[in-house]
Length: 167
Image 1: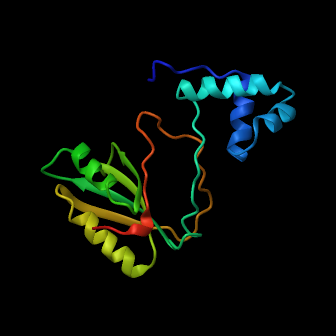
Image 2: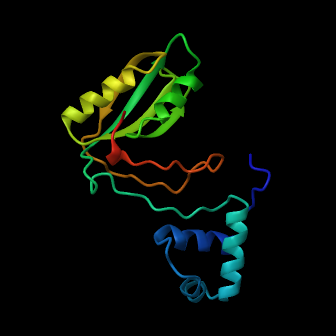
């Protein structure tokens, strides 16, 4: 757990909720919406950011930028530590989430592809990572909910350009 972690009170939670709706909302507008002073909002946001309790980020819609295929890929690992395999998988631009898990698989990933050809190439790249024993891909037919209110702050956000492709 982060030693700087804060317990968010009702005011902090209200600020965070408003910023989830629109991270570009000016402090003046937040203050008016929450019946606070602009200085209070500014100080609270600064405290939340400095304690790593809040980070406002931009998120792209993968379909809007040309990625029509969303897939989850379960990965079984053999002959190499799962954390090393996970680190290598996380380096692939099309992969946007990598989690070590307990269960039938050692790693779960989420990735995007432009089309079926791109999907086949991505699966080949995933399978080529040393230590990958088996891939269990599942292609999303329909996305009913894709929301992210929680992200781990223990690492800096990756700078990824999926449009650049893989080397």
